Image 1 (cartoon, rainbow, N blue to C red):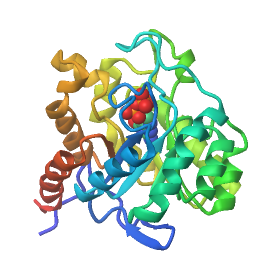
Image 2: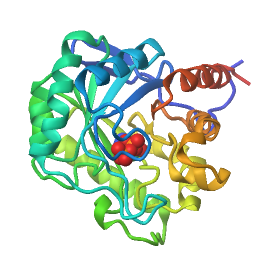
Image 3: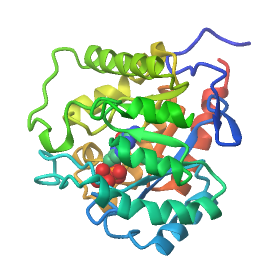
Image 4: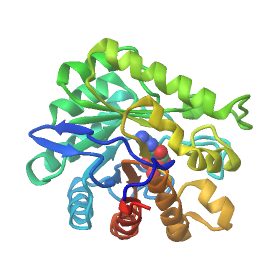
Length: 297
Ligand code: HH2
């Protein structure tokens, strides 16, 4: 018999169209594989800048079970973390120079929807022209006022993430009077902005690692079911982040198990999509977490 709703229950029926494909994001946990074509991303910087290598990596992630591939041309690694001064901001032209050759190559070869990780409208516009169908904006439409109309015009999907500041201006000691109040307020304003512009498909993301201490990040995961009240599918990105390293006292290359534990906690907290580096391992962990979620007790 079906029991009462549980904290991590996912709202049913998130039918989203990505290009020519329709996906029910509530049917199972979806995996977004990370493809950073940057020289300086915190865990895979410098590995996939060459377009053929980026294509190989994208195909490998799809073979391992990625439902989406998220292409990023600017590291958003914030300062004030284990990563020192943080990433150097890049111009739109530089970012486009990195991602466009890769997007064009993926367009003809990849069978899953492609996302672009950018907070710049100019970059999003060109990426959508080159075949991307999702804009993953770490600023929740907060940094570039043209972004909502660019996404709306293309009929694309938006991932709206909470952040406290631009990565380069991230407070060294982030403080919140009310962590969840701030995240929910920020994201509900972002969702309204998207709605006013005519963006029909929106996911929300609490922004693990963006202006949050280790304790804040753990509280975000523990409180993830609260995002359900926004009525949108939830994306979470715990993969290899510094809070995982801090709890386990491990460098970025040794964070697989911690990332999987965080991923499973996110699934049990109601996440619909996980943005991860280790696609195959996450897929296997999440299959079990999904099976547990489906059991009626
Ligand atoms: N995290 C990063 C980048 N983009 N987008 C969303 N929606 N959610 C996240 O948690 C998120 C994100 C940072 O991770 P990564 O891309 O691996 O590193 P870098 O910013 O150094 O390229």
